[in-house]
Length: 130
Image (tube, rainbow, N blue to C red; front, top):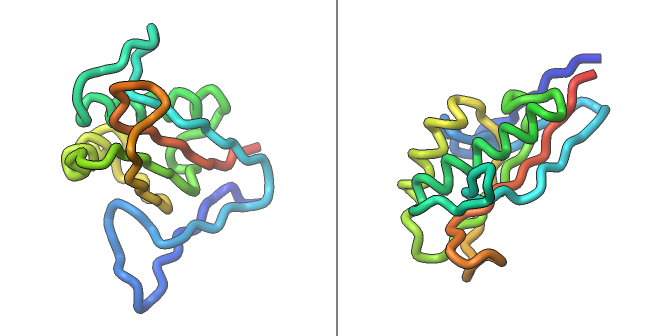
């Protein structure tokens, strides 16, 4: 069995260097990473969208590593941004942490998060190689 994800970028849809239109994952173990905020290991919320986005992604990477997988095995990210936040600043910060690992992405604008002051929350679905 192959452990590789396959990116789908069908003709007729735009191709983007940061995300793919779809991802096929092999049958096997799936990891669902719960929503990660821009908090440090002590639970302190960082200041600003750039710092929070980078930290939320580092937290996703930490969960992936704990499961024995990495960003190359992520099939889907969902990014929840508080309305009015400059998404472009968040995207720039995410690229620094996430690198060039393309995945399917959905970005949702929200009125807010359960934790006051949180500007972004990120969850993921990944395969766990055997």
